[in-house]
Image (cartoon, rainbow, N blue to C red; front, side):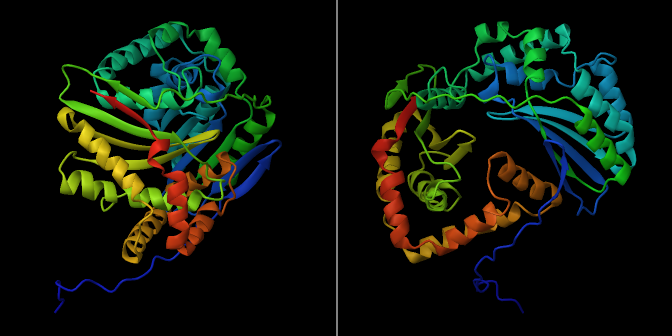
Length: 414
């Protein structure tokens, strides 16, 4: 009979190499196809360099994504939605800090029926005036709601504080900027978006692959634009008192390193130990021992042209100073490690890496990151190997360099 009072024997996490999609070159465009899929689901992602970094005005990328599938020369938004629904498919556009992604989800038997619609959206999106007006109203209503949330204000203030209000990673999209968005602006921005990268997941026929290749081969694509910006950090401490707030949103943040940096593996693992999972130091101290917050976490957000390292938590207003003191203390103590803590955090992190390749779509998601961020296809396997080789001495050295408490700007709103 199984003795549940005895834990199972410990096993060190293995490094599992994820399969790499096939590359199908189409002139100057790369199409990556992953066909090792058991289910009859198909996903096609078209990715342009048209995120916030490349937009001509703040908000252009957001509204481009909001309107991309809301009308073409020959179809209205309703007609597009009805066609997709009839064929059991969907189209979604999303904008980020660096990229704009148009995603088609379908099933094998219906892909041939909806591929022409995907091509029509790319070729003939009309960005209707009434749809733009509706998208603006939705954004402004959401903005009013979000302005009541301390966590939203703190995150916006954090990015602005680190990069500056005129930097694409730090700018705010306010009412005045929304009013400047026009149909002509969106049309011109999309035309200037440059060559896309295409990622296909699923079993599709040779004829459908040929349709994709022919479309992207015959379309006239421009060169991807280049832009440069320099971050301009603000004051080291920002505190905004909102009299009606019971809670304060805390952010401690600094500019950090990208994935290509030689210290990245050590910084990622140290961040995991500090606040990357439920057994982290910040969770044990701030939540479990002192009960100051429901949740606290540390994160690293690498962008194409920068990176942010931050700690986030919401605490009762009267506990703000105590929470900040304890966070600073944990940063200062991060260079004190023991083998058991290191083993636990390392295996938890390596296990989370393996979950990222648990299904075909997550495999392509991770591969897409390597391609768009200029990494090697085996980056994550190399990262896992480096993390397994990290010693306590190396981590202690990196903690002093990358987690010094005085290097973090502090933002408290509430």
